[in-house]
Image (cartoon, rainbow, N blue to C red; front, side):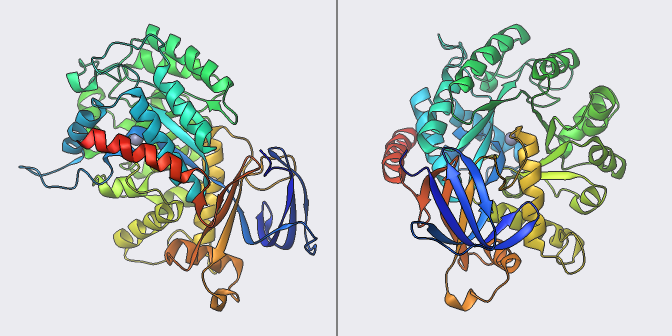
Length: 456
Ligand SMILES: [Zn+2]
């Protein structure tokens, strides 16, 4: 792409050691090949205001973007995660591979426009509408990868092992038929998925046992074996009923059971981990695993509030994901995370790392490093030899020009409109300008046609 090989001059850039002024970022191919600080712009430089590294969106179910906003009507009883899940199953059963590809491409364009440069796709919609596998077992993985390629977002694909309908090896229900695999078939699917990812620029692969509900202990062990040193993601302790069912099955709470029965370490990303005792909170923090928080989805589904303060105080690592993809905004995810803490603790600036520290900066730093760890994508941040994933933030008014860069991050997260994503380079390619992805129109037109048919 002819937008590669360029030098970007940022008035301020967030480097691994902190903010620096007058930074020249030299991009060649996909990589940052030199970083010069305190340097005046030169002729030919692309000039931007603030440069920050692209964030990882560590948890997405792409197909669910198609039902964003469509499950907000009250049902006959008390609505919950479980009634939403029935609605989601109905929607999942209507989508064919073309639909999934079109929806995923739209979603990934929105992610890039929001400042995400890598997505962790927790991919479980594997089979045809009747539950039979496609002739190509990895058909759906191919479509998701095509959407990644079309949009330019990097992907860590997390093929999901979903084998059971509930704790203790319960039979799956009919609505889950497109997700299911025996351990033997999953091994083939995972192998085929690795070949898809090997052909995808920026592609990485991990494994995702869906939840403790959906795999028996021996199936969980198999998933861990397949992973080797790669990322392992699992949904855990999202719902109170899930905790109760896990206790009824095993005598232990989900996180307690996992910590006792699996070697949870830095490879792991525990998605949600909403309902944890203090001992579980400290146990996950000490393990080095990332807690994969999805604050907007957790609010939308009425999951509960993650106990962030003691977790982070104990050295716990966090990252953010958009999960059900009801809204795609890195800034809003970080804001919701902080606001959930404020509402439950009735205090402000809970996630700021120390007195005098910016809350926005603390949230950004945590999500940056946790996201890269969880997606197995190397060290985070703008560094020489690293991937050129660069997000330019722009201020809406010259009145904001006196703000320190940390305050600009605060404004981006807490005062939408004051600061926004202006340009995004992903793996060296300039994909977003003036907040718009260069392929937005074509991808959105296909998405609109798909949605018309799905809703028609
Ligand atoms: Zn999820």
